[in-house]
Amino acid sequence: MTKAYVALEDGRTIEARSRAPGRTRGELVFTTAYTGYEESLTDPSYEEQILTFSYPLIGNYGVREERFESDRVHPRGVVARDLTEDVAEWLTAEGVPAVDELDTRDLVTGIREEGAMRCGIAAGPDTTAADAEAELGACKGMSEHTDIGSRVSIDEPTTYNPDGDGPRVALIDCGAKGSIASSLVERDAIVEKLPYDATVADVESVDPDLLFVSNGPGDPENFQAAAALVEEYVGDVPLAGICLGQQVIANALGGETEKMEFGHRGVNQPVRDLRSNQVVMTTQNHGYTVSEPGDLDVTQINVNDDTPEGLESDELEVITRQYHPEANPGPHDTLGFFDDVLGMTTTRTD
Ligand SMILES: NC(=O)CC[C@H](N)C(=O)O
Image (cartoon, rainbow, N blue to C red; front, side, top):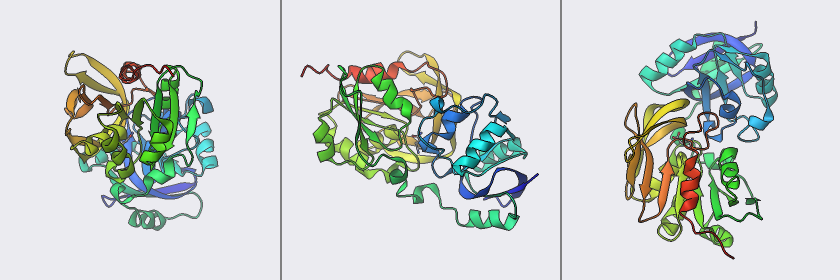
């Protein structure tokens, strides 16, 4: 067995088994998702994080590219009780260090008590506990990654479904999961994906019927260009956002965001709609939350901790969700969000 070491901000260094070699560091978080490891590992919102799976066996149905949410693995490291050979090979090929054969229940309990923490990992031949501790020492806090958008966004604008009959959507790519564009295209929208730092001139050039801010990693305060677009277009063009998108839109419209203790990551997070009282199950992955909704109304809340899961304004034509309505991985209860946001636009006639 090749050894690995996991050094934690709480002072512990834990021994584990190396499943993909290398040294790495990041914010240690956990997901309770029991399926969907391919979707989670390719979700750009995990950039700069080390992902622990609380479910003990990860990889039992192989690795298939058609389930990927982007073209690479985004967490900087992976921790599980038992990682299959398929996943170990995939992560090795991707150069993302991974470890297993450690007590993940204890690790997750620690994160629940202490909050998401900095972590360093050293895995593979010739690595030592001191290597993991050196990685931990060099680990930055999440909000210090001020350039995180540049690492997950596209460089050049890309159009999906150019011949569609539906509304034209400017999707600001702050690290968008692939299923967001495909959920819009399935409804025949034309999707103009623009980089995270797109300017008003860039948006003008696609003349959208809807401005959509995607999910993405890190602190929403580090996405000022997207916030500036929201300020510019609010009231003129309908606005939609998912996850980081909700946070950026709230911040731009007089609201505030804050870091949560350990966040919401999983596929069975219950959300209550305050108007219908209906509870739906949702896919989630976030570590920040909207603490003040600004000009928007809170229309949905998390049943576990009452944090805002949906913000809306009929007057300003804004609909946002903190969870992932595109539902990969996870339940399809909330796919109707895409119909609702496209419904805010008038069908293009030109
Ligand atoms: N999935 C996301 O968009 C995550 C949003 C943000 N980075 C957070 O952690 O809260």
